[in-house]
Length: 412
Image (cartoon, rainbow, N blue to C red; front, side, top):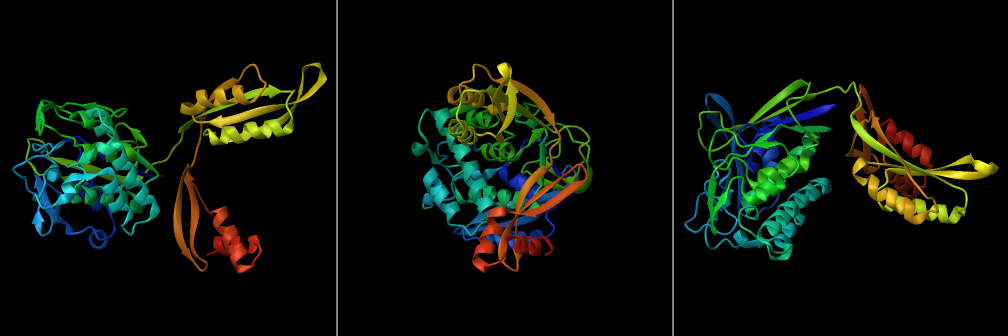
């Protein structure tokens, strides 16, 4: 299984994460050329060699209208001017209205870029999470949030760049180390705030963090949002065969190497790697139509699967057992749906460990045009299968039997 491990011993920022992932890319110059050709107005992203504590790596520099990021005299709301990693918290000039972009403006910018749909959705979701955190912290609404750090074009380049790299590297598993956040205080437009900054702390909810022994802001909101969006799990370096290592450098020198390290390799599961819940109840006094309606409601409420089995119940009554398969976080809600839409007096629950293949969707060029393929792998197994809807659409368009289209795609 392709595994990406992100080591955040010196925290994280968007540019550090992009730099580390770029070192893992098989064609970094081509990637940067495509990123710069997306059409972000006045934006140019370049990479440069950097050394921290004798360790060589990559630093990402973003130029806006020919000028590299630099502090401004007036630091607007939500900015953190002492962030040692990521100077995107600064406006570049009063004329750049993007320094006051709202969420709708940022989403429109991302929508306008020629990106794969998966990349576009990931980038929008990252910004939506940042906006929700800022709104919560400042007691306002999403519509009233105006981005100054994360909404500027240089940060849009960081977020889109990281989402593109994650899409192209396509890890099945992303493990993130405990994240150093620093300690102390940071100055912003409205005064002095604790470290981690309130929005950063909210974005890191559920992730393991620690202060470390260096004062200052070690993890930015952008870095926090990207890490927690893509992480599938947290912990120390997992057992894996490392194939490539990337180092993304921060801007300051510290007694420790100021870098975010990324390791890409292969790991093999030998034990259950997932948890699943089975909910079930017996029914002997419902019509088939009513049970079908209940099944539809379960799928709408997030069931992974739901089905009915014929059973023999007490007093020799033929009946049905309604089963629902779901993730643990949806079990309570789905049990409530079963109680609401059936005549049962109780729902049984079984918590199970599961051996699960990792799954992703890849778009591949074929003789019929672009086709989505489901790729499943893990435990020494890999399966690739065209999406049913795409096969059916081609069969109807070309006037061919479904089985012929499927065979040609599988043999391509």
